Length: 165
Image (cartoon, rainbow, N blue to C red; front, side, top):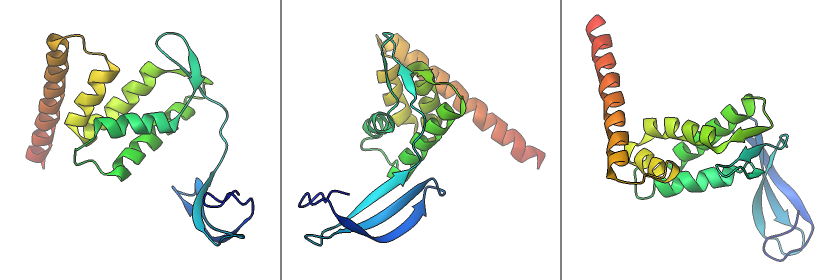
């Protein structure tokens, strides 16, 4: 493994432990030349997954793009990085369990919005406004009304459940 500090191509593993429910191995390494310590992550190489974009182009699935999009939507909001990473993990898991080699950006976006709505409503609206490309205020208001109706329905169901207990 190449050292990020001096670019030497030799390092030794100082510590190794599983993370992410055993799906990833975190390795602490030390450069043999300069002694700089750095961390690497090893994960199983999945079969390539292509994403079909709205214009028909295909590109390789990228966790990082999803992560950046959610981080931007949750900027200055009380959403922990741990929650964002969990959403990305769940989206990737859902997409890979479909068993398809290609998946549309629409499906990925819907998965993200479904999970993000449960975490932070403002982040959800921000993400939806970019993802759905709101053209004017009426489309934005329609989305807000749908969200408020879902929230009201969930609150009524919770109230009903409390009464039954």
